[in-house]
Length: 180
Image 1 (spheres, rainbow, N blue to C red):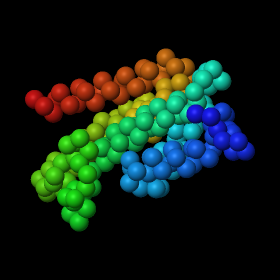
Image 2 (cartoon, rainbow, N blue to C red):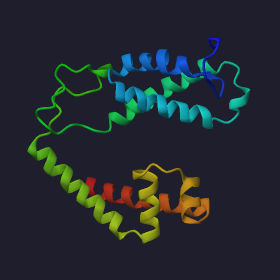
Image 3 (cartoon, rainbow, N blue to C red):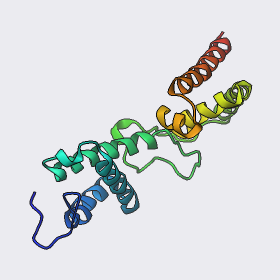
C-alpha cells in the first residue's frame, strides 16, 4: 500500500490509514471503540519494538498481522475473567467460538470451593521464602518475563528460574496431596 501524497508517515506507516481504515476494521471486530484503540496502541508498540523493523518491506501488511495477534491475545486474556454478577449474563452476547459458558454465575458451593482453594494456595505461597514469593508473583501474576525479573531484582536469570521452579514444585506437591 502506497501512502497518499501529503499524509503523515511514522516508521514507514501511513498514519491516516492506521487511524482510519485499520482502526475502524479493529472496531468492527471488537464492537468497542475503546478496546479497538487499546488493541491498535498495543499493536503499534509491538510494531515499533520489533527486531529488524527496518527490514520490513510491507509495514502495513506486517502491522495487520500484528493486530491479528494482539486481537487473539486480548481475546485469550479476556477468557481468564468471568463475570460473577447475575445481571451480566452471557445471553445475547456473541459466543466467541463457543468458549463462553451460558451460565456465568457459579453456585454458592462452587464459590466456597474456590475460596478454600485460593486460601490453600495463599498458605503455600506464604510459606515460600520472601524472594521466591516475590519472583513467583512477578512472573505469574504481573506477567513479567524471567529476564525482566532478573534485571529488576538484580539477580541472575538462573536464580529467577530456580525461584519459579521452587514455587511451582511446592504448588504441585500441595495439589497432589489435596487430590489424595
